[in-house]
Every structure is written in structure tokens, then in C-alpha cells.
Length: 397
Length: 125
Figure (spheres, chains in turn red, purple):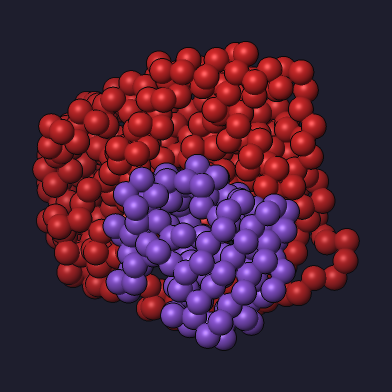
């Protein structure tokens, strides 16, 4: 691999042990994949932050980088953690002191290395990616959003590689960093209905992940909001390995393919059938509803508050949890207090996928197909699918 | 057969065969697949990877606990799998034809030599 003088000096340890280790990882992965050079990045986003996910091995890896002088060279953010940040958690998410100690240590190390205090899986809400710029992002849903919504360029970087890229300010020039790899390779037609709620968007993404992995799908569908594109991308990156799609009317790089490509058509009944294969619980069985995978912005909290007021709901019969970025917690404290009295919990800086809910619930409901993919596998918790509004209507009477 | 080599090393062990893409996050617990099959002292053969980018930490953690496979061979490669295998020094090869995976089963024996960018594997069933 060709390296500049500055890159070689990092690799030789002239800029500290952490930069040497980080550059070694970036170069080794790049060389393994056949990359010819590195590319400077403008934003790194590290995944693998929950202590429940990375354990002591991951914590040691972070400590080694920090103790070796590791400091970020570019704007850098990090993913949700394994517990609530900044607000009182719902009782089921209260953590034991040992877990809290380890999780806080991970956050402190990241801050000391120069990471922004983000604690979210939606880094594009903190710094909007620009068309054509190079990023090194972990967090599969954010990767797909960056490529699809903004036309920025990132591969599905593993958590440690994104961390290493933050320290050296570069990643390997390969895959979706290269123009020719961003061409559509399969067409997905969705005729006759709009993608206009979280669950339908997620089901379409889940379908793509199962059937179109390793492709860049050209999505010919009417997706009625940016949020639904994000939900679709998140599901496609969980049930499969989709890192990018081109959505008609949304993606800045949407284009007709140079050469004819295979096409697939999806009907509403295909998605209904898929939903039946994913659901393992009924809405009646759900002990709580979770939304915010990926994190919601705080707008939804106001919408929910207004909806409950309009319906004169004093208290929902079952808990509703809404996950938002950790950095937003302090801004919504009063609203969160008011919502809690109605059995609505604002859950900042975490989500139930990366938390420790296993054993604390048997069945939940969600509008997130990414959550629906991971909860049975990781937490042995059954899942029902519905929109947040269906859940509120059902449990507000 | 000749394969594409990504992470150097040599391994000889029985295979564990997964005929779809696997998410190390959520589909591997304490070194075992969700169906209970253990990965330690086996060569993991899978169509590829999917899901969370936390995978490299999971692979690294498995190797620290002695629960990682001896080597990994896939049809389709993903960068995060490469990162995990680099961190854990697990030999990694790709390019195994999908139709061959369908013919393999657990207990077939594999002998893998990876010298990037090439790799060779001998399988006896």
C-alpha cells in the first residue's frame, strides 16, 4: 500500500504508540482488502460502546489506545451505551454499580481521546455529512443513512476500525469510497403503495437485507419522509449487510444504471407475509413498547405529549419507551418528567438492543425492525410489531 | 481449492457450516451459535456476515476467551470481518463458491493455508 510520509511516520511509531497501533490496524485491513492507499476522512463514528457488547476485552483495547496517547485527529462521535444517560431510567433499565462503573469508564476514555459527547446512533444529526466526503463510520444504520441520504462515503467499518480511523484521521480507500462501487446493482420496485410509516419502512428494509445483501439496491418506491428512509436502512443493515441504497426522489446520487440490471417487485402482501415470519408475540402480550432504533430526535416527544393530551390520556396502561441521543437529555428534562407521569419513559443515550433487558421482559412491541431482528437473538425476548400510534390507541383507554 | 486470502495463518480442524450470513452480534453467544454449536477448535464456514459493526469486538473477545474458531472461510467478505480477524489473528479466506457451502456439513475436515492475497483449502467429507 502507498503511504504518505505522515502516514509512514505514524506506522513507525513516531507519533506515539496509539497512532502506531491504530495505523497498523487500518493498513492491515486495507491491505487485506487490496486497497492501494488511504483516504483522509472528515468524521469518524465509533460503534461498540456498550460495555454489555464489548466486555473487558473491548475496554482493554480502548485503554491501550488511550494510554498510548491516542487522541482523535478529526471530528469524532460515538454510539449509544448500555444504560440511560442523563435521565432517570425505567426501573427495568436500572443497572448494577459494577456495570455502571465499567460503562462510565468507557465513556470517560472516549471523551479523553477527544470524542464529542454524542452517545447516539444518529451522528448525521450532529454534523450533516456532505455529498462525496469520506467518513469512517461504524454503526450499521448510520453507515447506510450516510451513503443513502447524504451521498457521503463510508464502508461498514467495524467499531475498532472506526476508532482507529479517528486516531489517524484516515481510512483505507476501498469499497464505497470509490465511485464505481456506488452504482446500483439491483432494482427494487414497490408499486401501488407508499412507504409512510415506520413499520412498513422497516419491513421493506428487512426484505432488502435478506434478499439483496452485497448489492446497492435502486429503490423505486415512494418513501414519504426522511425518517422512514433511516428506518428502512437500519433494518436492511441488520437483517443483511446493505451499506447503501439509492432511493428515488431522496438519494442525491440516484441515477439510472449504465447497464441493465436485474429487477425485483415487492407487493404489500409480500411485506405482510414477512411481518408474520418476524413477529413472535401479539400486541396484547407486549409488556412495553420501544421506539428509537435508530434514535429519534426530540420532536417525537412533543408529538407524543400532544397526542396524549388530545386524547385526554392520564396514564398509558403499559410503558412506552422512547430512545433519544444522549446529548439531548438535559434539554428535555421537564418534558421527560411530565411524560413519565403518563407512563412514557424518555431513554437517552441507549437503546434496548445494546442494554441488558434480557430476563426483564418476555415480550415487547416495537416499530423498529432492527430491534425486532436483535431482541429474540440477543435477549431472548419475543417481539410484536406496531406503530407507536397503534400502541397508544390500544393502551390509552 | 484456491481461495482469496485476507488474514494469514494455517488451520486444520473440523468444519462448522452456516449456510447463510451470520451476525456475530446476536447470533453468537459465549462462543456458540444460536443453535448451540461451538466455534472453538473448528473452521467456521459461512456465506458471509451481516448485522452489527460491533462484530470485531465480539470476535476479539471470543479469541481472548479461547472460544474463537481456528479460522473463518466465507463466500463474501465484509471489511468488519477482516478487522475482527486481524485483531484476533484468525486466518481468514473468502471466495468460497456458494454452491460448495451447500454441499458441506459439520464434521467435514478442512485444512487451510492463507498467504494473502491467496489461500488454499482442502476439504474432506
